Image (tube, rainbow, N blue to C red):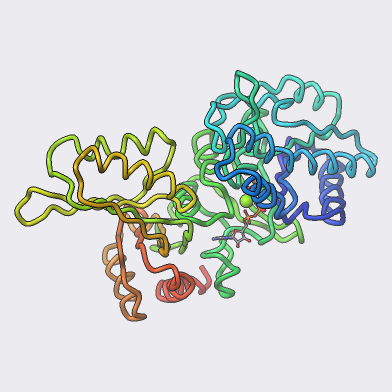
Length: 406
Ligand code: ADP
Ligand code: ASP
Ligand code: MG
């Protein structure tokens, strides 16, 4: 088999952990598999580099930021390759560029366009274990890019797809995908398997165990993923196509996202084309707008529009919105960033009713006010006050009986 193994930050946090990774890679290779390893930076390293950038600049240049951030993964790829050689295997570390990971030019959240990988394929044929620096690529114009936070997951899935790997294993600090973050709810239950669709919702709603775009990519190209722990040999969670069993479960997970901010524009003239104008400017800045709510005044002349963006983009979004609001003749713009999004997810919601009501009722019972609501076929999300996040996760996990065995 050809297996891609991705190791996250905590799994390569120090030399002992890197040696443990080399051990596992060595065992996998000895079982007759060809192995391609993808590594993250040592845990905390990316945050440290971002911190340094902000110490020398108030708005760090994004091109330079990418060059800086990509260095973290280079360090671990080289060290891991050395540690694997020490175990008696041929190993070769490659940067994103050497792997031929070609991306678009959107710095700090670039999209992969193609993977050439000729060098890598040759080395694999020559019997090397490859160790690829995750999270990074290169533009056609040869600028280094990074793939957004948690982007090594995407590197791994895309490389698995490009090389036609049989399996993509994501090694992390928990045993698999749980009904909710096991670090917040100790009673959370590990799922044996989960559908791509549910995983995509959970990830995009804040469950950072897999990066959203990595799940999107895996779903599109049918890359089977197993999430498991680098600290033990427990079976992990298989992320795969939906089956009938999965429909029987109404709610399969609870997710939360603390990286949220809400912008409200008041007194916008209510006429065609206003929303289009407002959101175009924000989209052009590659900022993802999530929930949008519009209320029209009773006389129908003015509207208030509220929407949410990632808190990390809120400064930029606020500035853009203020410019557009002025052009449109709106009366005011406000920002609120003490909020979080809390969501329940399950493919079974398609065929069961009353789930949203049960969620609202549970939050109300615990005195948690709902600021905004959005729903899709398989999820319900509420914006609440940030300070109630953990409480909301726990009571919803309880209400929907997620701790009980399948
Ligand atoms: P890595 O550094 O290996 O990429 P991450 O920190 O990005 O690891 O992701 C793993 C973390 O995701 C876990 O430690 C856990 O706190 C968090 N998490 C959030 N939701 C879930 C969930 N539903 N199941 C498992 N882990 C979750
Ligand atoms: N090191 C990067 C981050 O912290 C990418 C990753 O770990 O996947 O976001
Ligand atoms: Mg991660």
